[in-house]
Length: 130
Image 1 (cartoon, one colour):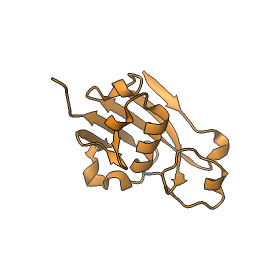
Image 2: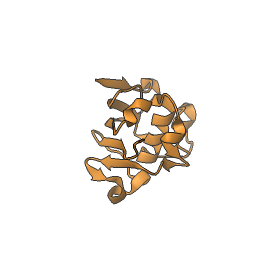
Image 3: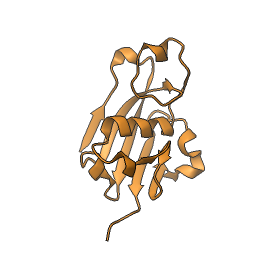
């Protein structure tokens, strides 16, 4: 099952479409939906603010959408509970494996990786209760 989420078209000058997947039980924090298809603006606030307004389009400090912004967006828009299990400061918590197009995100620049149209980002929890 896929969930789709988009920003209002009036706020997006150009956008990118991503596939995001959660595994290792991590999907339980995201409405128990493993795969999501998202449309995000290609240019986002430098501070990773996810509440877009006219400021972004009228000269506020911006950057290309990156994985760090994606994590903030997921936390603020899709995460249903326990944000502390997903993020710590501006990155994922230890014990979460992140793959960008099937490659470890550490090889791609971690949160600074600039997202491209049709990228796939996978978050897998490697921590399990016992």
